[in-house]
Image 1 (cartoon, helix red, strand yellow):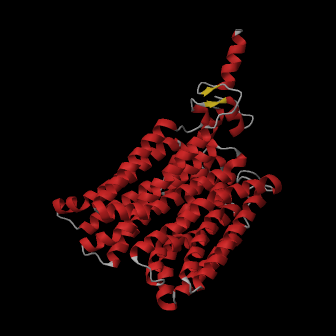
Image 2 (cartoon, one colour):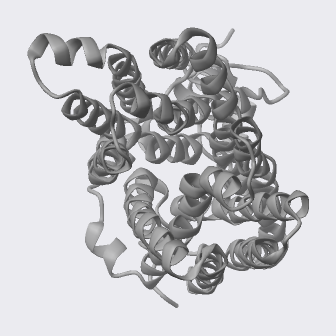
Length: 453
């Protein structure tokens, strides 16, 4: 073989890719692991919501004290979004997600050991629970921004919506299975074992992640040149210039905060967070207290909103990708968000006022699904607006989303007590519409570094 031809071939294919005429599909295996990570994240986030009643009874904790434990997670989760996003953009998602999963997996295991530790140290078990859940929230804060960074690196421009939908679908699947899994394991083995099992699943997930994933497709041994060209058309396989440029840049915070698209995105996601936390925090309570369901019936119904999210999230992403190819990325994302949030608001309004429970609960659950039909496009837009800094932007967005969730947790309870559950859900439906309207300002067709025409 001619030496020059050999060198040329090696440059094209790269040291970490295999040459083949047909494109490989390694990116979808990586997306499958992302879904697994999101599912395990949901498991370790929701487990206390299901086991909390048993813990409350064993340690004589009232509702206010349990609320403090729940809030501890949210403080850690909200405060560390942006730091983790910055770290991921600088160090890459492989190491960031590894540290994240180990952190919240360790937190789950410590929950089971907390009573013994508190007794040995002579401190309040309530305080130990709060510290552990804060630490768990810190770990989970890295997951969504890091997964968005994986999608930015591993998928083609035309696949961003669908891939972002798969990420959200993983969260939905985890939410679907968690109530059943935690209730079953708690019933048969006790709540401590249920947390140990959550920790073991997190450890298994991080082993799979480390064994298979890489920060960039160019670094993966099973990715061939054809797949690389599909993911990043025109890029040369094995060419590290793009990676080096990305790492050399500083996060353009001033450009982000000067962008009307960014402000519209994060404020719209704050409204989305308000609505999402109604399903997340109050659906089980609503099913028991308002609709009169028994505990196991309510637990089964609590899975319904998350199942709807898992099913409709990738559909919403695919829908916007399809529209983007025909109408442009700005219109594609906006139309998908309008459809998702509009249908979600109508279903929530209608379902909350129906007196027939077997019709009302499916409609409210489906409202959650259409909320996530739209949500996948928020995450995709983070990549559209800041391709090299999608982790930082998505972290900023998710911080505001959790502020909306924190407001929702208090406001929904206040409205339900003083004005009734129908009024509380009416407000959530109106805020859902507000999310869609705010998103109208987002121009996903132009990055924040591009000048306005």
